[in-house]
Length: 359
Image (tube, rainbow, N blue to C red; front, top):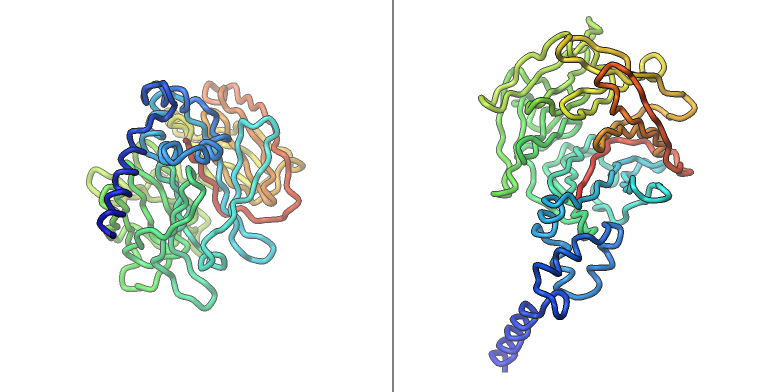
């Protein structure tokens, strides 16, 4: 009986695999049609059939939409609410009425953690490490698949960490520095390779554990370190992937890195919130920082985070107050910024980190 049932089930799966995506059309033509459906309807596509669900969740779907420039980029924000718990929101910047929507079902064990990493690789968002008031740093990693709106536990970090930097370089996740339970090796970083689903740990004495911010610029990872007690100068180090070492970054570039940063087409922008709110731009050829423009204190609620889509910078502050700045003309010295805003929430959540996922 078991053998018969097993054979029947296998036969059913084979027939399902041979069943066309759209009756009367070859699968490649069906894919051409379905891939043009806007991302906001992908959840509905997954409800049509098992084959459609598997297609919309697949790497083939993601690759096809990116190859043919059909992908849509949404913004994800990791926040902390008034109950001191983590929460996550998503924004479709192309929606007719742009507003933040809350993502449900974050991993319960992560809700109270501090100092977690928040990173994106492909269509997946990773929650990394973290610690609690009475809990040491953890190795745990959770993964959110934006295509299927589901959380799962992922391969753990090599080193337990909290309050560290995380970046993606060459299709790998880097968890860098921070505090951890292993005090014998504070100058270390972990690298995640999705091809092998493993983390590898390395160390370098030039890497300091006290990290304020990080960016990827010109194929290298830059880390802005905490200022020392005896000096107010901003200190930064840079990771050179060709030899796997950390070195001191240029003092001129580091000197103006005094706030959240974002890179657009190889140009570094920083939101200086020390005296009013100014958007600054690093001009590599002239080795100097220039002011792009000021933001109204009525539009933003510091402290803010930055994220970029094409030529637009999204300035996201407390309560997910969001201002969109167009810096398309900033690189040629005109300093023009065209701004718009996103519908505000009634919450007062603090924004920890923001990332983009393109599907």
